Length: 411
Ligand SMILES: O=C(O)CCC(=O)C(=O)O
Image (cartoon, rainbow, N blue to C red; front, side, top):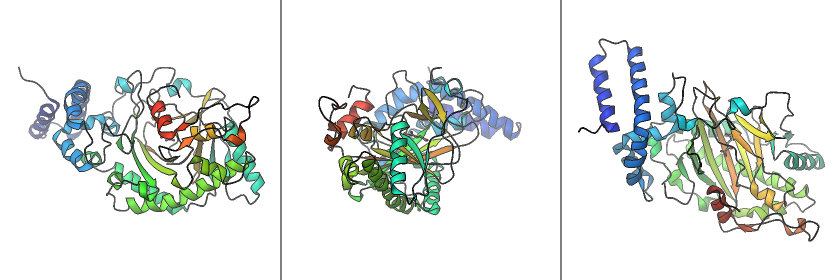
């Protein structure tokens, strides 16, 4: 019996193209190849995951070893959503594992009536009391707000975006050189799907994670060498975004009647890790059925996110999923779980998710401000008193919090 491996199947497609160019129009050929590749996707995915991919990638391989490995196991590229999307460009369907249950599908669950807008805050407001009040109120009522006049020059943001986009436009094999080793403890690297999904569903997004601060924690193996501007763009952005975070921590402290330095120190102080993530949501033929990032709150203290101009972020407000408006040059700030814990529940971490677009690539650049793994976070003693106001959360090391959350275990 001849076993049809994904590689044999691909070679026969190459043969097919070579011998039929003269009798088929290029477009017809492309259509035929796409539908054959789509069939290959459906036929080969279990094989690739179960047989080829696993044994080849167990262990912690260096990025360049992974690159060679991907070249050998070329069919592995179907694992990335960007590659899947390119096979379904002209289709009116998507693979079943991307179709969310109805209770999550954006077409069914997005609220379309009149809604209040996520607060927008001018960070250059000279009236500090007003600024503190606006940030504290938005953090209590929404857990999310947009900031304008934040002081990060437009060029710094454009350079960050251009470098990230150029990375995702590299050939698949080159991107695989930065893949997160499957058994690694850290989230750093190129890949998708971090959290376990009990129903085995997938999300329409690929990502790249790497630390951008502090310098002693950076692993440059996960920083793309291409485009060459990538490193400088990220280093410059790290300096600026840290300044915005400092300003926010200060207002969040003052908003609780605490001294300005408290929140940052209790979040990890100068050792705070800035974890960059780039989300790449390719165009999707059925954005009504799928999600980019599924509903979650962030593990972080704060998250500061740069979006591109394709809307997609949604937040749950008063039990309704509502769209975040795209505001040119604004940054989106999420209150994360650790600030909710430190404030003993006064500030709320925001439940959010992202949708995808039919015709355009959506991208976003969240930076998660996280404590070091061993750093302990719990309700601030200044905000707790027994018996009236007992702690609502356990104090625990950040690494233990993250482990429980990633593995859906009780905190
Ligand atoms: O892309 C977005 O707007 C949201 C991304 C997000 O929530 C995440 O990456 O955790």
